Length: 220
Image (cartoon, rainbow, N blue to C red; front, side):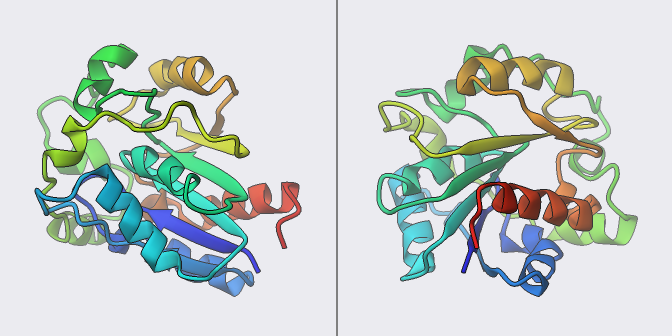
């Protein structure tokens, strides 16, 4: 059985995936949605990977799905156990030895496109208002420790990787992120309508994309 391992971004929680998880389970897959220790200043990238690894347990057929800063964590799990596929959704793509804090400058980040309208406009502009308010209320503080640590792998894992770019992303503008994906992963990104948080704004569409990737690789 395929197991989707869903890894949220900075300052978030497993709630981010609460609409996608049942969609995937109804299609016959197992789902593990992780709560990373993002508020713990003693927890760095190794502890994030530990948390994911422990939550997986003895499950196999692993499809790691990393949202935003989850792109720094998902590949680390590949050094610990067999993984069938990595999917980054509006994900940050680290280079060997790169710190998360340095990623914007190193990648040529042009800045967000939301202006001064705050987190709702930046992350949740296309999410239903009540759900956006709940997601914002469930947000957690993000400790600085993992962003200060060099990404420890020598290279991107030798694991099939897909990148799903969000065309209307105000945090990571699509016109810029396309080049980052080509430069850092050497692949063409796939694209989906919507902003930075498609698991909330388009859970059905996102689930269908994930299932398409699983089927393409023949993961049962």
